[in-house]
Each structure stands twice: as structure tokens, then as C-alpha cells.
Length: 83
Image 1 (cartoon, rainbow, N blue to C red):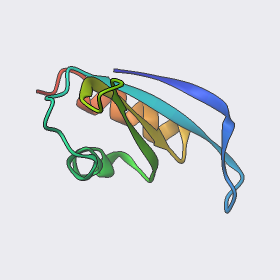
Image 2: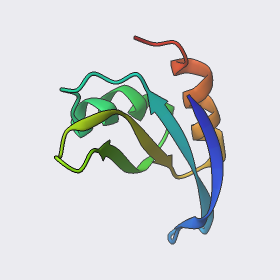
Image 3: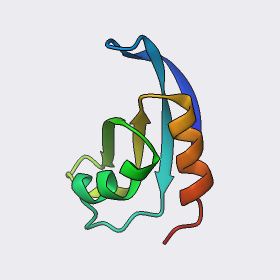
């Protein structure tokens, strides 16, 4: 799991640039709701992007965009290695 500042993501209410976390090793049956549930303790989630192949099957990873860099850092710190 890693994060990067996304200069294009902007929370328009607070003006804070968002940060994105890569989440790998996901089960092919994972849902966006489950990902939101797991990462909601880290901070406000702006977006979850589950990556799929051309046939619509999950590829085993996603990106979670948080409202703040601090929330993204917390996610990496607390959730790294989580199975």
C-alpha cells in the first residue's frame, strides 16, 4: 500500500488536495462498500476506484482517495499488511 499526492484531486469544500492510496492483493469478490468500511476509520474517503480488466473482472487492486494527506498516511500506517 502506498500513497501519492494527486494535484488534480481537490476537495472543493475545504480546498485541501486529496491523496490516493494504492491497495493491492484484494480478493476478486471484494466490494467498494467493504473497502469503504475498512478504510473509513482513517479519514474521509472521496473515491474508491476498483480496477477491472476488459471483461469486468476485478484485477485485485484499487485506489482509495482520501480528503487529506494525513488520512492517506494513516491508512498506509494502520492498514499495511492487513489481510
